Image (cartoon, rainbow, N blue to C red; front, side, top):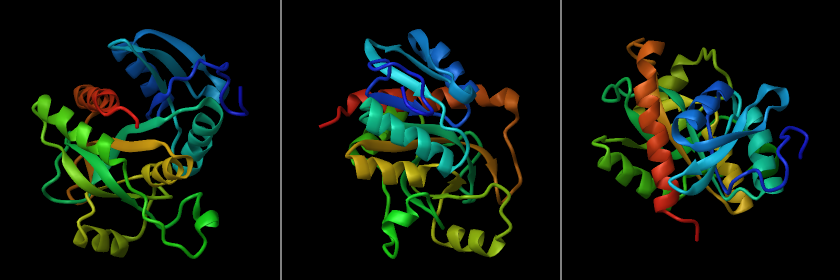
Length: 238
């Protein structure tokens, strides 16, 4: 048990999927895991552990933004022995060729600032995904008939952004989408010698203003979870 996670020793699997929304964690656990057991509900942040194709998996919410994710990822890695963390979440597309419901595999995650900034100080550390997970996720998507976008994303530290100039620069430099957690997840995975990947579903588009209705999201989110699970266990940790 830690300050923010009430799970007992042994209740957290080495592979953890992390949606931002705790209710999405519950939906994913009930949809994809056999015999999911609630292992955490401290502060309403739900975490479940169960089996997927005979493999132990925990699906645990991260909350919104890098500071919240940093709390849970740190405790999962440091105190519970997690080895593989995969973010499953939504994002906003920034490129015209990226459409609603598309899947993005985040190879890198740019940011203005992260909770790790105080450690890196003057260093511009470049956080990236684990290549084995990234490659396995691309193969898993292909097996499902999905052509994912693979490349750089932007992890914002605010939701209501008022920097159109910055958005234009990111679009110009090929950033695929924006979300709020992956950069710090990648930082922490590097620091703790773990593997990390962000598998994202496009729920809205910054250029067109289009947005995916809630009623149409479930199938795309299901694809994202399936890709993450397949990637985690077809690319075992070294």
